[in-house]
View 1 (cartoon, rainbow, N blue to C red):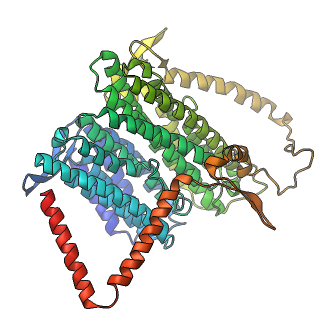
View 2 (view 1 turned 45 degrees about the vertical axis):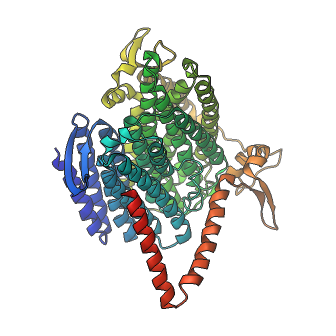
View 3 (view 1 turned 180 degrees about the vertical axis):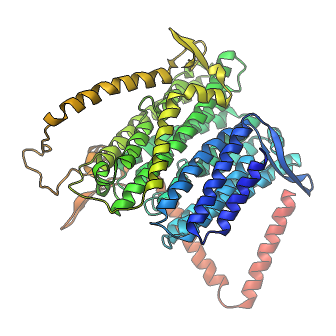
Length: 632
């Protein structure tokens, strides 16, 4: 079974080499992803080293597998499989060879990250993933400036990790993950920040607003789901090894809660069809970061009650990661299908997917959006319930500071949950179920797109209903019990002694039964259903008039105009409001500063004088030499 790992890498390599033959390249990517999934299933019950290549000075390139690797590899591989198969049809819209090259090597980078057992190997995988995600963004041949912003944040993440592992080597003389447990607070902070940046946590989301609405949908899905998943994996990997710092853990909790709230707030105001899901990523990864920070604090106590709570928080982060990866992959695929069929970019323009494009992509939008809205029994409902249950147990801590931080984070995340539900209802109502005004999409071959959408729709529903089995496979059966006639292990308990319980499997069965009744009533009486025009103050709407997505959220944007920096726009042919993500301002200011420095440096160094070039090279050489001596 270990051969599956090398087969997977070989197939991805072949896919990258065959990038000029687009369909073959995606087929090889699909094969490599299937091999990666099978290998992940094998790794669930095996911990072993895959490769060890000595470089000298106690530095080695090491690959290995364990249970945590298996969990994340299975989650990521399912997303890779879906996106590779989906891209076979989707490539008709974006036939650029850079996409096929990028997706194969980007996934190879993720494979290295998940199996790395030392800092150097992880950094290699991290850079491969980042650079070829950037190549995918550049593939359409435009939006260079916006793509370079993503690369700038990616390299900032790499720089933090590089400094962190340099500190590790300086402190312990090793780059092995086993040495991380002997690291100090500085190492913890540097590595944490490096991984957090890749999760698009506020304020490191500054690059996404200008690019998510323009790149290819398979690229957007890769960036939002498996790439951010690597940040989650890295953070959990180091926090499971290191001694925790309570102050830093509380910062992680607050930063995650703020990110969740801000992502939900901006998703409400988003009008581009892919920008809303992008801000949903900020919100969901914020909840994951909060759960990881909560685990870090609770695991530092020896009391059985808090030990149980720490395990519950850890599993919460895993369930949220699974939920986000599956639901976001489905959402971007379904929206991409509709967007390209209509050849549009905004939510208003994508209306009427059910009747205009097809029921399968419409159901993909509905199911994934309902999952993010915490609609039972979908997997998103389970993850968000666990998050709130976890935070509302802040009273169990003796420390008033920890209790206050956890309770405050609970308030922010509860607000975020409401905001993201508001945003997702807007997305469903205007795209999947909106009135199409007779618009029809262009006919496109979509059999493979339909297959992948149906498969992910099934998984989002199925995983929510069978979450007890998934928790057992993750290795945490102690969280499951039986209660009030419901047999074990169908009940998930959030605390011991019991604080709150849920039975997702039973809830799924009840929801199915309750769904049959209204569907049966509708089918019997559908001939008697009549349609009425929308109320517009007594004024009849014209056939081409409709209530816009911007109007849906306009009241909130006006009430919170200080937060949104809402501005009214009036012109001869257009009236409306515009909002701004004010937390992006530091990124814009930094961009302007870098541009000015670059212009000044270019005028000083690139002036045609050989002496200036030689001086520049010598200065850089001396600086690199000094830094290398300090690190070594």
